[in-house]
Length: 315
Image (cartoon, rainbow, N blue to C red; front, side, top):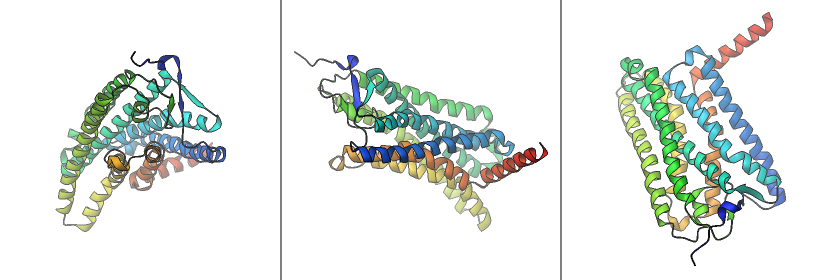
C-alpha cells in the first residue's frame, strides 16, 4: 500500500527555537519587544508619509507600501511563535499551516519586487530628474505597487498548492517556528523533487529578476553620480539613495546567505536564525533606516511634532 496522508485530520506541531523553559521565556520577552518596535516603527513611518504634505512623492508612496508589507510580513509568523514560548506544544492546524506558508511567501515576494521598483524610482530621480514627475506619475506608482502585490499572490499560490499535494505520513513535528516549505518537505514520505525544482525555479526567477533590476538601476545611478563634478552635488545624489541601498544590502544579503550557501553547510538551526533575522529584525531596521538616514523624513517629523505642540498649547 502507498503512503496514507492523515495530515488534513491532524495538527502540525511547531518545534520553535528552543525547548528549554528559561530560554523560551527570555526569547518571549526579547522578541515581544522587537515585534512591538517593528509594528510601532512602521506604523509611525506610514503616519508620517501620509500626514506630511512634503512627503507626498513617489519614493514615499513606495516606502509606505514597504512599511505596510513589513507589518504584515512579521505578523504572519511572530504572534504564533510567541504563543509557542508559553505553551508546551505549539499546535497549528493543517489549514492554518498552509495559510501561514502562503502569506509568508506572498509578502516576501512582494517586498522583494517592491525593493527593485524603489531602485528604479531612484534611477529615474537621479538619471532623469527633469522627467521624474512625468515618468513616476501617481498612476504609474499605483500600477507598479499593485503589480508587486499581485505577483506575490500568484507566486505564493503556486508554491502553496504544490506543497499541499505532498503526503505527510511521518512525524507531524515541523522543525521550525512557522510553516515553511523546506521543513514541511522533510516530513514527506513521497518524492519531492518537483517541489524542489519549483522552489528553486520560481524563487530564483523572482529574486534573481528583482536583484538584476536593482543592480542595473544602481549601475546607471553610480555612473551618473560619478559624472557630477560638484562634490556637494555628488554627496546629495548619494544621500537620496543611501537609505534604499542600505535596505537592499540587508535584504538581499540575507536571501543570498539563506539560499545560495553550499548544501553541505546547510542546517535547520542556521536556517531558523537567518529566517528570524529576515522576518523579525529587518522590519525593525527598515523604518529606522528610512527615518534616521533621511533628512526629509526627519524634517517632516519635526514639523508635525511642532505643529502638535502648538495645537496643544492653543488648546
